[in-house]
Amino acid sequence: MDNVTVLVLPFAHGAFPGAGQTVVHIEGPVPQLDTVQVDSSHGPTFLHAEGQLAKYRAQLDLLESLALSPERSRDFVRDISRQL
Image 1 (spheres, rainbow, N blue to C red):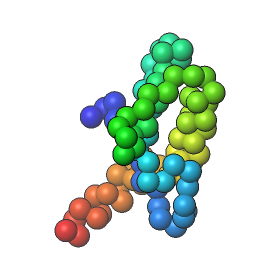
Image 2: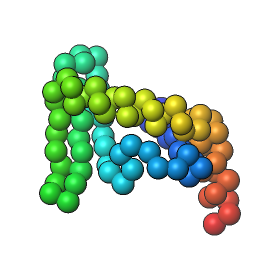
Image 3: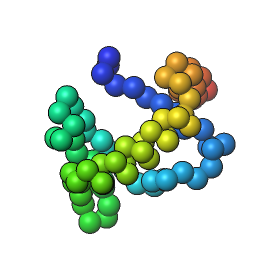
Image 4: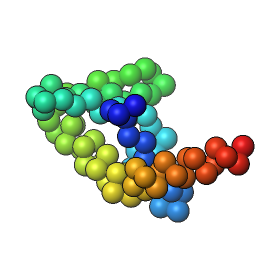
């Protein structure tokens, strides 16, 4: 899908902020409507406050900087799938 990017975060980077937690960042042309959904054992939590959004944006930016490029991620997933 053209609107989906898959990035692989290598295990070699070790632990990272948010490990083990599902985070969905929904963003659009109006930043004030952005939302972060965090899943937990209690169910989903939706965060809208600017401070909360800034924290998760920074966390996701860090993860993106540590991840393989989209091309290298694609090749990585392709290589693994061929080994199955």
